[in-house]
Length: 255
Ligand code: 13P
Image (tube, rainbow, N blue to C red):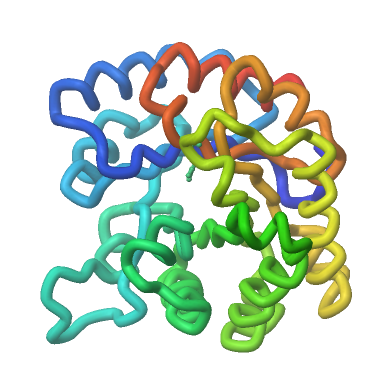
């Protein structure tokens, strides 16, 4: 364990699942992850399945979370789900600012910041996603983009809100493409993120959990998690395959 934040592997199911397949997957995770220590594990499921996830995971020690949340707590916001509602039935995590929400749902830095604040306000642990597109990387703008995304949230929430938070570096070009960042590339950005937060508050930066996301598989997880500033992973496709997710969690609990 390199940081004070602890080790975490979280699955992001995205818009996948059914009652029947979820049941199978969750049962396999409960038994497969039971012997593992030294890391936390969680799944982030679509809203309609969160109650099922809560029931299946009860008493297992595996956490669960949502993939987004409203920036508001209640009101005339048709179709939205608030942090207050998520907290009401025991949710721990909320992913905020996933690149798919930024790209497909038009979520900008300020809205992402407001969602981060809403998660904190309701006692949820935000998993704040940052990361550059391939064009931005090719233009040498990775750090500029990640700094912009981080600073927007810092400005709105204040550095104290980052205490114990989870950040996920997810280069857009590595998500679902099978093309993962090299451990050195990921480590470089993770160190940059921790350093950037340290400049505001070194004690808070030491409590962050920094996840890498983007085509993490059983075959590359150990090498990624061995990097000094990579505390775990945010796993998409491989989190839908019980054996793969368990193998990735094993790599994190060994690392
Ligand atoms: P993949 O693991 O499928 O590349 O997805 C990563 C991701 O977006 C997790 O949030």
